[in-house]
Amino acid sequence: MAPNDNHFPSSKPSTTAPPPPPIPNGSTTTKATNSKPNPIPPRQPPIRQQLYSDLQQQQQRQRRWQRPSNRRICCCCCFWSILLLLITILVASLLAIGLYVVYQPRPPSFAVASLRIHRFNLTASADSSAAHLSSLFNLTLITKNPNSQFVFTYDPFLVSVVTDPDKILLGNGTIPSFTSGEKNLTSFRGIVAASAEARELDFGDGLGLKSDLKRRSGLLDLKIVMDTKVEIRMGKLKSKRVGIRVSCGGIRGSLPKGKAVSMASTDKSKCEVDLRIKIWNWTF
Image (cartoon, rainbow, N blue to C red; front, top):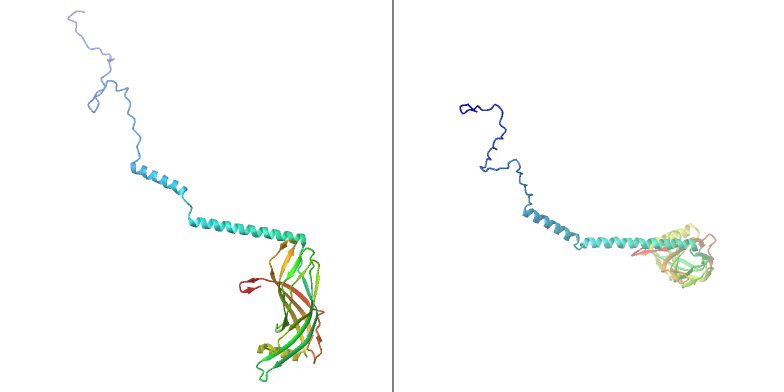
């Protein structure tokens, strides 16, 4: 090309890239396209919150292993005591039911074979303010043990003769202690039940008894009441002594005339045996 030739810029776009824009903080970099952002460090919890969390964990561990309170110990003792008591009662009940099914025990039977009235004197004072009674009864008692595996041992009996149904005491006596063996029949004759000479009665009892004798022409409805304690034995096993009451009703007699002895009717008499359970001052 000649030196006088004019140069004109080419209409083609330039292939060179423009320089990168300046960084706002005033620094420059040669490799802006290859740069990566720095990672943000994790946020650490405050020191006070971390200490409180550690304290809570320590308290929970101490509470988990701490000694139980007295209230909890008392509740546990009561629970186990009641549970053992219920188990004991259940075992005793099952044992009693088993013995009853196997041996079929029956209560002893009693009967009044005869009753004689030797003396019965009822007197009232001149002003009818008091009454005095003097009596003497003689009875025969029969008792039977219907069991073949049990033996009954009785304490002394306290025998009382009372009116029926008013239960006015007319005389009392005793029967000595005895043992009724298996399938045994025991008879007591000449049991004396008497009232002391001129024993004073309550005003109401004396007046009522006198009017009844007058209205019924000297007839008396009597009842024999006997209280004692009995022990039951089966081989080497022994029960505790329990109280029983034997009540024999349906006896009718008449007043003796002079020195003659009056025989009471005991054909329709019937005796019942009841347990006497005493709790403090109450007897059932």
